[in-house]
Every structure is written in structure tokens, then in C-alpha cells.
Image (tube, rainbow, N blue to C red):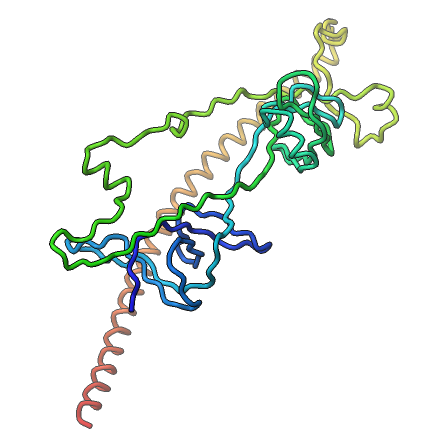
Length: 326
């Protein structure tokens, strides 16, 4: 028959390399592995998971179904852990990183491990530093990093599986069977407030806007560059040039030409403004005519649709009557 017992489940999923990665929640539309401590059963045995055994729960009580895959003394389930550090000295492609490890012994265990910056520059842990903070080390990268970069190392930590097995003896006794209560239920019964970790509260992120210095190309290099690669931006002069400072004195013929050109521009601007006003009035009248035409076409379209639906309804009713006779 069924073996009824209480245990603590651990959810995980199997990656392509055979690693069992710990899951905090069960996936919504996927299967996952469930690891728990219990009696030995043959593979392919059915499993039924029930969250609560009390009879006064109105909702559906079945939490999950599945089959056993294998039995073992211990399973290795790992979860992701990111070690974060910051550079404090940079020499070309080499940087001194601190804050990632606490002792030199930890650094020696991670020698050769791959590290990466947030900007995507990959690197490697080399050796612990003799001077400076404890746990500081020297790392090499494929490109020069900045002091503002954050360096992290991806690691996997084994999850400690608790061996808890509480068999259900009988539910027919007067006292009933009492198993281990979850933390949420104990908090509700005792009226204990929920513990709030101040580090887990969302806080507004304030980042200083980074100002990048302008690209400065040496004059010798710019002269050797092709024209399309040269800088086209003319520098703003601090003082007015001689061409702007000097006074322009026109003679009689130049004054006549200048006056004539101004008169032509005035006539052209007047013509353009009158043309714009006439175009606006014409468009307004055209919109009114188009609206009346659209309204007339909509009435005709509605009448045609009504006639079509009426004829289709008559044909359908005639078919139904014909089927009813047979």
C-alpha cells in the first residue's frame, strides 16, 4: 500500500553537464527533480505529494505527482554563488582585486579560476598579494579594466540536504497525527511578525553620471588620415576673428544691388504667405466635401450589409426547415 510520511523536499533541475542545480520554486510549465529523505522503494514507483492533511481545507490539496527515478545515500545539489570584488590598482592588463576573498588560503584554492567584469572582460585569478588587505590577489584580464568595474567569480556551493523522515502512523486516533509545522503556520498561530532582512529591501539606485573625455587626435596623425576620417567640427573661437571685427563699407552700386535683393525677398515672402493661406482654405473645403461623401457611402454600405444578412438568414432558415422534415 501507500507509505505515508512527512519529509523536506528539495527541488532541482539537471543541466546539460549533469549538474543538479537548486531551484527556489518549482517551474510553472516544466518538470523538475524532487530530492527527499525517505524509505527505499523500487524505481518507477508512484509518488503523491500533499501539502496539508487537515480536512477543513476547501481548495485542492494535491501539490504534485511523479515517480521515483533512483535511490542513493546522498545526492549532490548545488546552487549558484557569485563572489564580488573591486580593483584598487591597475597596470595595463593586470589588476589587484580586493574584497572577493577573506584570506590568502581562499585565494590559493581559487588559483586559475575564471573571473569576469560586469562590462564582459574575462580574466583569471593568479596569486595572492603579500601586502595590502587579506584576501587580495593579482588577476590578469584580456583588456585593461577600469577602477569603476566590478569583478565577480561564479561558483557553485553544495546544498545541505536535511534528513527528516516522520511516518504517519494513523489518522484515526483521537489525538490525530501531528507533523512538523511550516514556519508560516507557526508565525500565524503565535502571532510572530515576519522577519525582515534590511539587506533584502529594495532601495533606490543612485548612480553618478559618468562623463567621458573627448577624443583627442594628435595633429601629426590627423594630417596623415584620409579626409573622411578627419574631424569636421570647427573649434569655437574664444575671440572674434578679423573677418567679423572689420566694418564692411558698401559703395553706391553695391547699396543699390542690396536694396534690390531685399525688395525681391520681401515680394517672394508675401507671395508664399498668401499661397499658404489659400492652400489651408482649400484643404478645409475639401475635407468637408470628403466627410459628406464618406457619410453617404457609409449609409449605402450599411444598407447592402443589411440586405445581405437578411438573404443569408432566409437561406439558413430554409435549410434548417428542410433538415427538420427529413
